[in-house]
Amino acid sequence: MTEVLFPQLSDEDAEGEGVLATWFVDEGATVADGDLIAEVMVGKVIGEVRAPAGGAIHLTVHEDDVARQRSVIATIS
Image 1 (cartoon, rainbow, N blue to C red):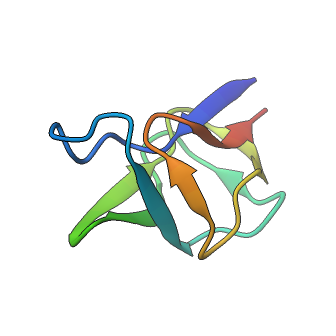
Image 2 (spheres, rainbow, N blue to C red; image 1 turned 180 degrees about the vertical axis):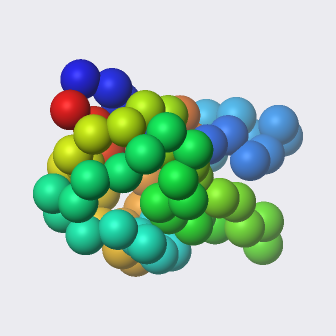
């Protein structure tokens, strides 16, 4: 199992929170290493989340949820 982490977009507030803006995949979808799977926002900064491995994705954070930077937002098995 591989964890998908909320990226750290702000060095000023490394432990800060952001919003998971959009998932580009559905629960249980098969993703490939490097696929664009989500978009997140920290303040006014938007960042992309790419799959760190291939496999079936399980979403643990939903769209519009607030999450801490570097926290787990999904797993891939």
